[in-house]
Amino acid sequence: MTLERQIQAMRLDGWCVLDNIIPADRLDEIRDRVIASTNRHRNPDAPANIGHVSGFLKYDQSLAPWLADRRLLDLAGALLGRHFRISFTTATINEPGNERGGWHADWPFNQRNAGHVPAPYPDAVMHLTTIWMLSSFTGENGGTLIVPGSHRNDNNPTGNNGVSPDEPHPNELNVTGEAGSVLVMDSRLWHSTAANTSRDPRVAVVVRYAPWWLNLNVLRPGSEDRRILVDETGGTENLVPSLPRDIFDGLPGELKPLVSHWVE
Image: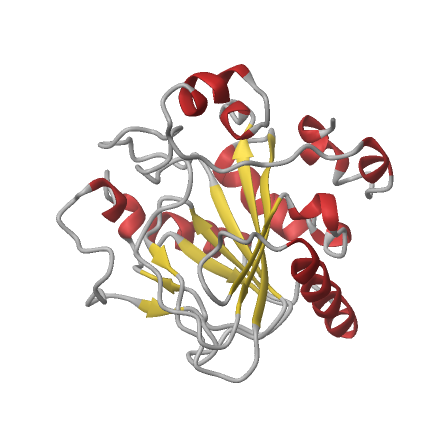
């Protein structure tokens, strides 16, 4: 798929898949490392049978050589503008037996987050969600469920828009793809966790990209914005831990500008 077709797919449908971003001969090693790191640092409050680690780059740099892949950066630049940065890195493993999740749009469009763009929000690309497939995504192992075109709505099921977040959607699609591929979504796109009915974990890392102007301080531990929007209100919000300087110093040069804002 050419860059022009990728841009068209993102604008019309809200998603596309970039194939073969991670070399096939590195996949087994990376997948094993991500599983081990997730087991070591997993969030105890995550839903049952979901391996979840926020700020994953702090704990595991297995994907670092590819997070600034030129094909991905060209697409992100076309949608977000020339200057953008990584806002989240999150390990997400659907383990056998996990339950289907609810329809939602990602931060900053999830209306349940303390820091969000209030609905009705404008029809503009403000954030990208990418899901790095370290296992092949299938209909059995929990390939992400999406509603194509839903990113053009000015609200989503987290905002009481009349669509039940817990019911199947008549237009839903289960995204499939080969290991090593990357699912790219407009963060407004309605999506949900799919049940893993296979015997093996569906291993992925979620990386999100934000334009330079999008305020990420509400995600930062100890920030004034987080104190005002989260601590004082009792609201809930994602938390992205800072990146230690020694970890940052060891990252590939082309990745450093995308994550320098998270350095301790």
